Image 1 (spheres, each protein chain N blue to C red):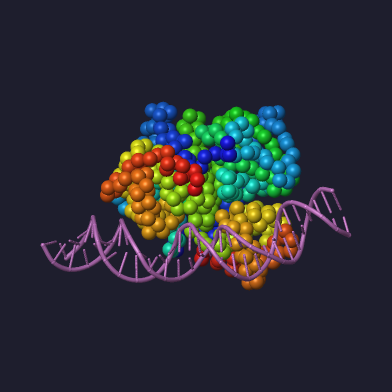
Image 2: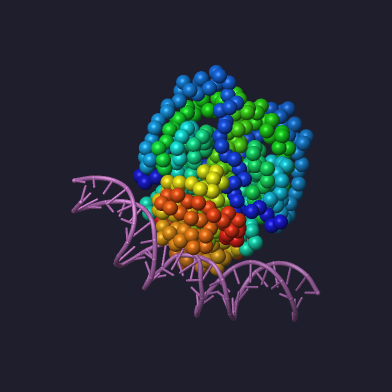
Length: 230
Length: 230
DNA sequence: AAATATTATTGATTTAAATCATAAAAGTAA
DNA sequence: TTACTTTTATGATTTAAATCAATAATATTT
């Protein structure tokens, strides 16, 4: 066995944040009292990169992308579905948002008071452990992405993202993907034209089928093989 | 202002782990009782990727690289100097080491009992906060590296690494770099020949000077500019 | 429905960077 | 010292993927 399999990085870890389960009624009441719940429409910016972090976000419903931009360059570092925390980096030490957060679907976002969350972490060990489980899983995921995006070529990278979307975000082999070709390019570190060509290749090889925004994975084993080979 | 400056990602955060300062005598004694202190020679493997995590490591002295490998591919995801924790991902949730750790210099490594560290985090809030400050800083650093390695071209990436080594690891504009050209390539996601060519370019342009393993940064502002432009 | 803008697709061309090939230098062992 | 291995360096060639250019298909607005 030669180290870990970098291909399946997204499926190993269930990042679902069921962290609130451990809270007492009083604790829940405190969080609830100080939270602000905001609705966002598809396309809206929830957090702008570089702004000062004043809250921890909990995505109650919807889907968002986390992205870093400078002028020409645009990289989507992560996609987060409902029931996930966002901006946990800012709990301790990091003052500014290192990435922008944008709604890919209509979203409901809870802005939690950063001090409240700190208090819970201090007070409720199960909550703290749950939160750090999520943070740590995300660290490993980011390492895997770093490896994928820098070491694999186009087909391997795209296979990785398909496996990630299927295994982690949508938990199904079919899903409606609310991402443009440009988004997919920013997610896989390639040009939009390359995304289109690879989708075409994968369809020709019967690895996937698409109709509009809908994608279905037809040959999971082969996709994993492509991911592993790079 | 167009977002954050991705060029200076390594200098912003002082990741030095002075976490032990907050511990009581009893707490220190506990840690000490269960720790194992091991010396490693330059080149030795301290942790092999894929193995089960049983300890949290504290690098008492020396310098290490964290790297991910599969067959041909080799990526150094991070360099850590003395007084830093390693393998904090494995505190909660992550069971296996996602990367290998190798000594770049002779090292003294403390293997801390994972349960001890969990206990301290639970018991001593200052310690917990310090640890998570380090973890979160590392998350942001990894995002910046993801951006640098995927969005910038060779010269920008190499400028980033020089700034990182100077600002974060050695905290000086001159330093002895115990990294081969191959290591530098694995660190910047490029071919060793490209590293050599870029060093040559940078020397020609009087941005740096080198003699053997010694590197001196001569023109920091221009290096930052190259980093920012990409 | 017509007009306009945006997104997706395809093929041709260019290019940044890898690979290849070979030599020089620096370590290491015999 | 010589022989051998590893690392560093440099130029020539190849290639993966980006860019460019032009069209088709969707959306969106009027």
